[in-house]
Amino acid sequence: MNKFLFFLLVSLCITVIGCAQNDIIRSDYTIKSGSSFGMCVENCYQELSVNEYQVVLKIADRINDDPEVFTKRTVANEEWNQILDQIDEEAFRALPEVIGCPDCAEWIEVQSLDLVKKITFEYGNPPAELAELATILREKRDDLFTDK
Image (tube, rainbow, N blue to C red; front, top):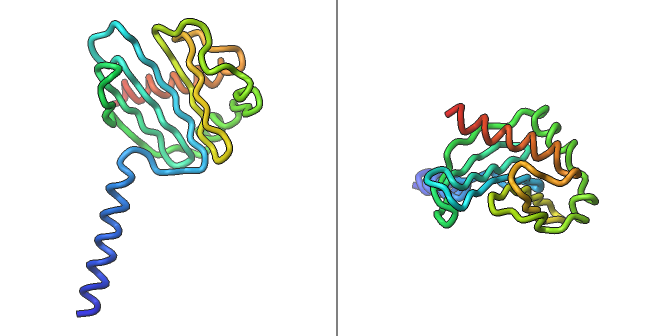
């Protein structure tokens, strides 16, 4: 009987942990990127979350809708390092949170143990400090969207 209770407890823990991780596996460092378009019919909001374990793309038809997971996959070490190489936390901290007039917006958010900041800018017009990172992340969003 004790083995049965132990098995039941372990199964319950695995189920609870698995359900809690329906978006992205937690990490000490996560990069998010997305886009939103106000006057749009479908796929108006996209959100990419990437860390050293996986990349997740969420999509919503309207900006106010709750985005649903569109696709997710694991991240190769080279892919993760390419993204990290483009992040200068000091420069990121110095940027204002909103740049330009982002009606059709694009954004990048860095979440780490000592930084949580989101920079929003006009779609396709990132500040120079984020240009390469914005291009990489936009391409990842586009690739994940068309690969499914």
